[in-house]
Image 1 (cartoon, helix red, strand yellow):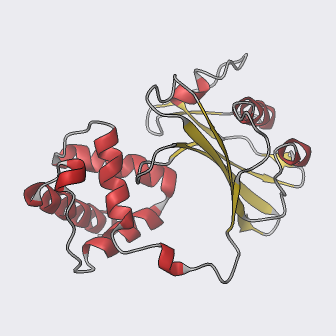
Image 2 (cartoon, rainbow, N blue to C red):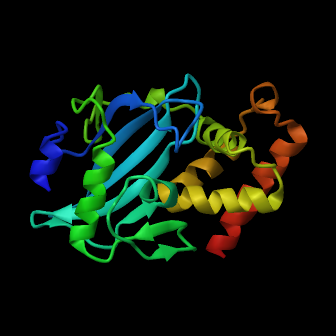
Image 3 (cartoon, rainbow, N blue to C red):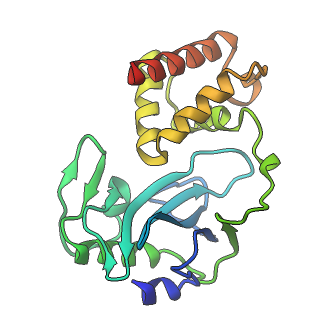
Length: 229
């Protein structure tokens, strides 16, 4: 595992996000080139998470899609890795995996499968030297780079990019998908944006008028309360 990641300039001891030069992955996004990010984060002593994220290489806030998620320690990567459906079906792995309708992803059953899938996805990276690195433990990172409303706009942009109508049912379905990949913190950030009192205008960029925006806000708040009631 350590040797595999070193080929891509990744230090397993660090908590960081590594970004690589974008590639044309037409089976994933036929309109934009795709940037690939690899994120390592400490879970507990001796155990780290690893995620691979696909992001359209465009100049606006868009959905960052987590396509691979697992964990590893000094002995290697674990089983039960989640692999996005479209990714596993296009990386030419020579074996099959069980599919979870609930997760909308394939799940590895052995550590060896996790490593082979990871290797296949990493081979999509053309230039193996990272173009950018974010240290997740850097104490003096500027928090001002994250503004109130960023998460709400990310969520709306994700639905817009997927050509999803802004109905209550679709908003809830989209929430479930993004929380599955981003974690419960994403829902907290959405709620904080909504309750901040700041005015948002997404009509020009995403066609979301005040009525639709109020529906989105109301649905998110109600969904949050239903999970914690």
